[in-house]
Length: 189
Image 1 (cartoon, rainbow, N blue to C red):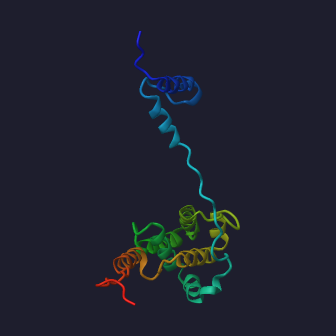
Image 2: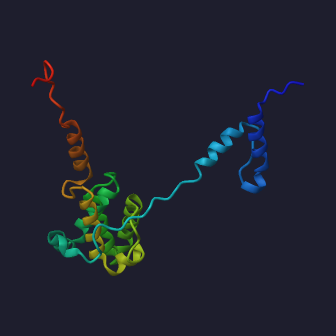
Image 3: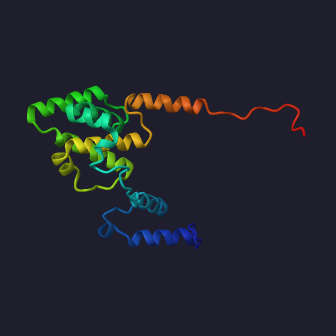
């Protein structure tokens, strides 16, 4: 009798059947074995290589202006950092106000700000140094906020204009890309 499946299709089907639901936890359907393998490829994601922070935790005085603002009113620095980390989905003012409310009610806004440090570290694949994010914020809140501010600034963000201002500036830069002039008549010597 004539077999409608090619030898390659039979090999895929046999391999897929050997990985039954009991061994992989994934039920095998009688559908294409090819789709089974393409689904499996999406499960294996390579982690990003982690990079160090551009400045140290205690390099606060490398940006004296931000250091002073953070010491006297950390809600401003936190709001600026959170807006950039959230990619503009929340505003600087709302993040800063929420930080202030949490600080006034609980006396410890560091538990809120440490989540943004973790989120930022994941976005930029930064090392978790010198210790865990919550410990850094609990014991060195001002230094942690200053470091996060400097990191975003060193990565090209203008912290004063926020996420949307940075995107507008970036889009204007793309639209104003210099173009080579058109030379009529070709080259002459």
